[in-house]
Image (cartoon, rainbow, N blue to C red; front, side):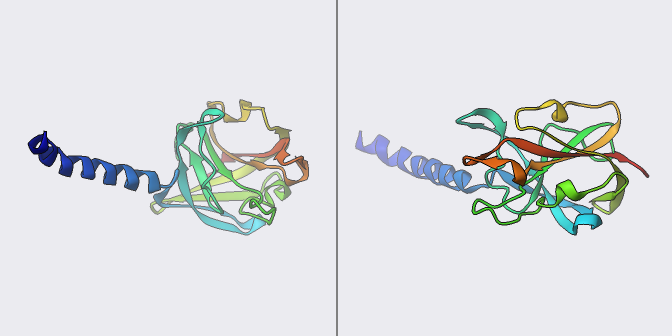
Length: 175
């Protein structure tokens, strides 16, 4: 048994170290050279990818570590292609201070939104700004047009430790 243990000990230590390193990886990973610009609300930020994870509430996008970043929800559309590309960002920090999408509800129809992907600029124009129940997932559905959907929790709907509504901004490709 002692000889067998000596042979497997380095492998076991290596597997434990890999597990520890993987547990430190963020749920949201930076995406090379992709940025979001919304001049009307002074947003200019990199876009990260938010992956689906198994959470206590089920399999969903893990936005817990998104912080003050904007994330493209993995599995939604891709920039420059037909479909619904969904970006999420927090409106408030855990202590209820303003976060990256705090002013998202102030956008107006016609406001420009730009996404830069590795030097290629995609221009969008706000088509609608709406508030929906937090449980309304229809805003995530695929679309037959080239659509950008921005979503955040509505700060005005905070009650009893949670939000009851989301702010949804839909923008269509304009150039």
